[in-house]
Amino acid sequence: MFYDLDRGHPDTPEAEAEAKAKDLKTMAVRDKIYKVRLSSEEVEMLKSANVLNIAKFMRDSSLNVVNKRKDKQVYSKLDRDFILELSRIGGNINQIAKALNTDIAKGEPFQAVKVLHLLIAINENLEQLKDDKK
Image 1 (cartoon, rainbow, N blue to C red):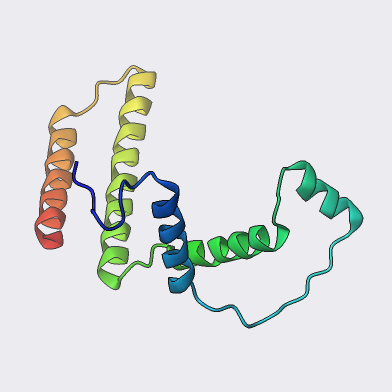
Image 2: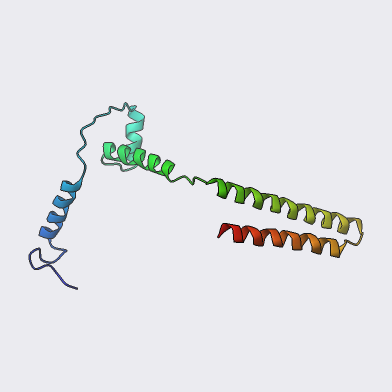
């Protein structure tokens, strides 16, 4: 491991203080103030949860919620069409399974050739979707 000769070892107190000062320089200036009212019970709940800096905790919590909203998956029209087609195929598979289970429960032989044709059609649809998605 190499160390910067000017700053010394990265674990020294001087290096830590310099890193902290650098972080403070790059931090955005917070010049807006919003007041929030909390009940005594709410403050006690935060303190019992070992929250030392309530303002920082509330700021970080609220920004995390907003950032998670931005991270929501937004589907394009192509993705929605793809998901819809997959859903239709899933419905077809369920219908086939129900028909097979009904025939088996009645003691009737199921038509293997018909099932095979349906499965081949579903497989072709899946292959086409896979090719379209690429």
